[in-house]
Image (cartoon, rainbow, N blue to C red; front, side):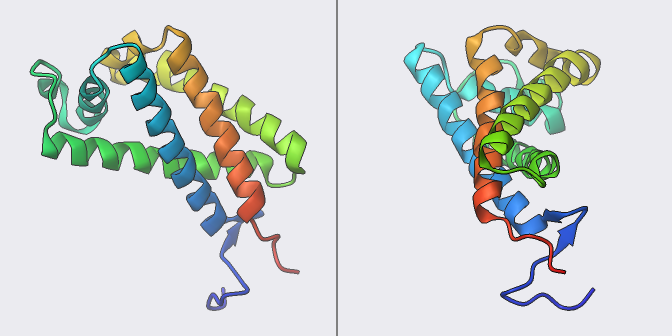
Length: 164
């Protein structure tokens, strides 16, 4: 592959990698904002989700109270959250890579819902059982499709078509 210039970006399987990663990052920011806002609106502790996410790498020892801010857990949960957001951004981009705006955004919503199903009904019961409690309810169910919508919209806006 030739070196990248400002007019040429890395592509893989028809995906503009830079646009896909940025779309995942933007969707991850939207996801965190919605998660925090919904927890705050419902009077829930926002640091519980941080501990549950950090436990993916650090183990269940970080789950017990106190449910307060912890700098190390914050850093670890942020790394996990945005690491997954980047991967999911690539997945959404793959599904919408040949789509126009309206269809692409609808596909993004569907992919986001698919990510929710896989995360909470496959991976959580097998690997991270403490996350299974979050699979019910309106907020977790809706946040993932919103992630997919934001990732798809951002990707479709930012992408550059594969050069000939």
